[in-house]
Length: 261
Image 1 (tube, rainbow, N blue to C red):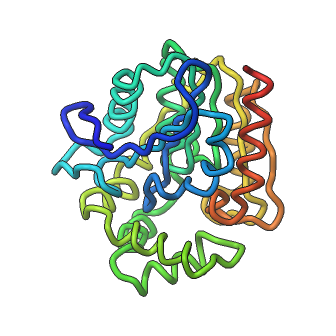
Image 2: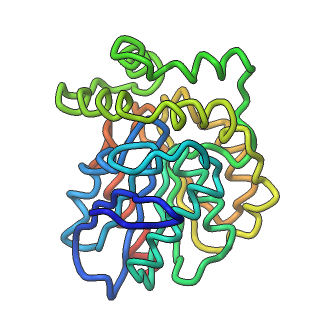
Image 3: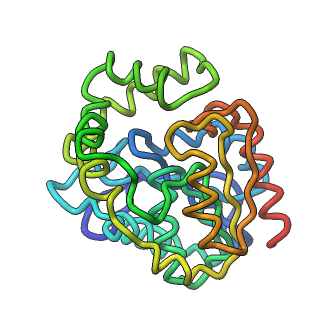
């Protein structure tokens, strides 16, 4: 469905039980869409109400010419949460979506009861040279570059043909301004002083073989700033854990929510 938030039309995939108990709000990575979470969500909808959002410029959401900062994407999600009247919810953010989720949680919004960060981009600026960021900005320019990124950067486990094609389609579909904004600007935003305001329970899910948001970086840049956080490492898993190890991710989410329900 479409939801008008922060002045633009955003695509939202809403599933599962009623909103009276606990909702899970999913934010995807740079290059993905709400579909990135579909296998995880399929294991959760019998228990939870789920809301997966296409960030601006990705999936089926509108792509404005500007406005791709963390604050913009956070405001988009906050508007959706308000429109859907989610009373108790857990934010689940992956990579770029994880950094957006950290900013949202730092504001201590009413109704937020937990934060799950899946291979999150740290609150500090991404440690990449200008040249590396420019190369990253071109990673989704064509099917060939996307396939190379999948094989050499994003995954440790082979994806099925269906999932691989989905990842390629989502990456190709992204608006040019959205593709370039993250590596060139948004990934360099520094919210380290803000994440100290996060007081809700936090789970960090890391891939053992993640080449993007590596375990040692998550330990030094995320865990040290969120002393209440607990980390779980998925063996043999790369950056796209919700596609490489969806059952394990769903189980961790379910267990986390049971402890805070």
